[in-house]
Length: 225
Image (cartoon, rainbow, N blue to C red; front, side, top):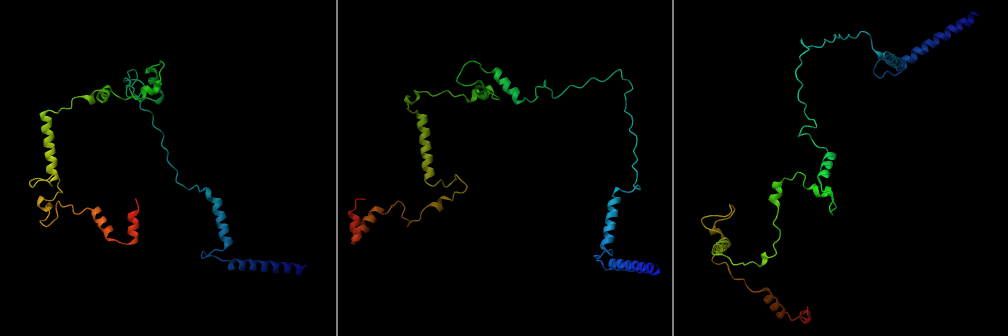
């Protein structure tokens, strides 16, 4: 019996030493605690997440009473209601607009529905209609007398003269555009071939064809195209 107890004590001592050595040999990852200790600490923190009772208590002040007038028998008059249906500036809903147009439209038979016929009249004033209304096409205006009066002839003559002056590279005293160079800069030199169109290109082409005596040129001259 004594040997059995002694053997049990030896086994317990060996187990305790092995457990201590295993704890010392476990990696700490620079924290100074083994994996087992870190696990137990995490579990302990999870259990104690509820918080402690040492937090500062919030001081709640009671709500003050409502301020009542001294005399409740005489009250101020109510303010005028705004943004109601009685206000002329109250926005109109699409359904109300459609109903108003349908009620004001011509309800008789016609090729154009009432809502289509009245749609363009919404928001269009009579002054705008009078200003944009045309007189229609006059069928006899093309056969009218086209004789011009002396004033019209004079104005047209002045217009033609002005166009001729503009075509003659402007004026020496005034410019039509700011980017126009002076008139002296736009005059050609004395040796420039001004007004000479030169020889026609067709004449040059015929002369070149006549000087070419090759077989290909002769066949090309026989072709009708």
